[in-house]
Length: 475
Ligand code: AMP
Ligand code: ZN
Image (cartoon, rainbow, N blue to C red; front, side, top):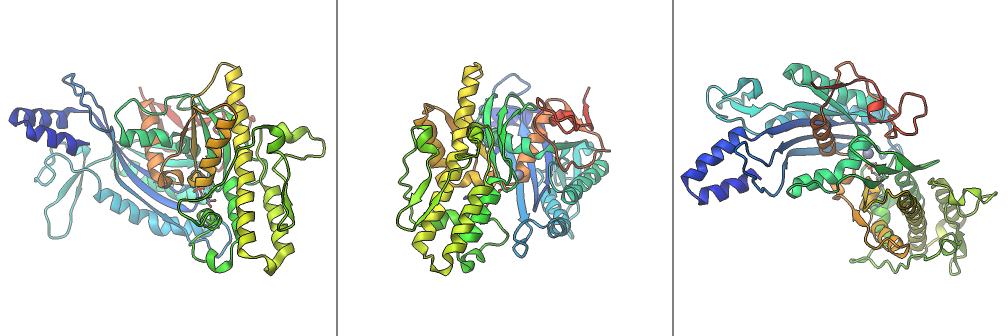
């Protein structure tokens, strides 16, 4: 961003160079170092945000307002456990977090007069002393961002305690954010990194969060208001996909992945050609959508989630369920055993993914319809979380919602590395919360559960981003 401006100003002579100096020294800038350790990923980021309007009143149209100076992630190797193991993950955070932070500190932007004897603003400077070299002055972050919850208690504590240590040592504020809010805000981070203002999407929008631990449909109304429209009553979609992959994929193929994230393997196995051949036609009626799928060739059938319940009453409820589908695939695999060839496995992989994704799409369609009836219509659906990177899911959502009367819905899928757990989204959420005037008390503890929904509080004190203690408003 600044490099771009520098090039432009160099071309236009000394007067411009002076102007650049003024802009560099006087444009307001925010810098945060962020830590994410809620599950099995240890991630650290350094994010900088600049105002696009100079104090002289000129608007500088830089391509973006944000720069990600550092972003790295290390995932615990949980492959021996068939799922995320809390102690294995904790050990991975303990081994890797400090190393990542060390690298992040080296990547902080240089302070003005970075190699001189004295930094121009010591209160905003960290000085590094590389062996046998002159000291380097780095810009000190304005605050530390960290995930407070939801997540595994011990994993959260590693990140939070380290963040408190940095905050007290550097004498800068702490901003402890909600991990799910961060997933929901990820497209706004992408917008800030790639385009000039305004941020896209503006509120309100729908957020579909589909990860290894969560399946949530949210009405993202504002920075801190994300009422829950639907959630899973059993396992998360990512968990369902990982289990289906374990039932269906040959063990040598499964062992090519470190960890338990089998979704990408299942997708590649189901659609081996490039480009993939989906051959998909969306159901146009609810009757088509809940019809049982029968494979004449292989002799098995699958029932769409919630299509058949004993009373029939649940078929239209605003909730997700995936464990029935997973058990059905497991039963078919056990029944067929070694007899089941690759072609049949591929078909079962495709059909089970199709049913899971159409189940999601049907609830999104109803939510759009309900909001429209209440004159609260939204124009954008943000799809985030690890499963959002699945190409078949993207194809189905688009085709299904078009067939149901939403051809103009703006579907946003953040890039894959920002869809899975990462510290850049924590840094961005820290920025947005900071700009709204919030910071965190140093006495806060991690929250294993932390609902995003302030409108349906359970009375357990867990409801809503601001519904938990530990926030303070800057004067
Ligand atoms: P997260 O919990 O957000 O880090 O996402 C991890 C989950 O996303 C795991 O369950 C993965 O198997 C799943 N996932 C990642 N990529 C894909 C993909 N291409 N297709 C389906 N699931 C995926
Ligand atoms: Zn997550």
